[in-house]
Image 1 (tube, rainbow, N blue to C red):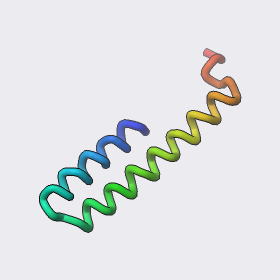
Image 2 (cartoon, rainbow, N blue to C red):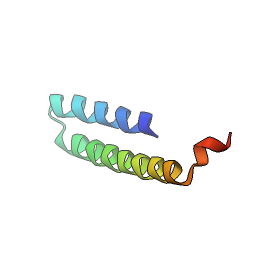
Image 3 (cartoon, helix red, strand yellow):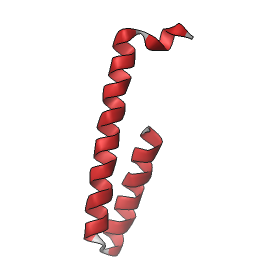
Length: 54
């Protein structure tokens, strides 16, 4: 999921560079949402100790 956030962030930077403000804003918002979802899931897994069950 973090990979997708980085991909959308790169799309937003490239779109902003070329002047596509609508695409840039949308891609930035998607990247932010995915990043925060990743952080929340990471914290949940860290607190519950799910990663140690392997």
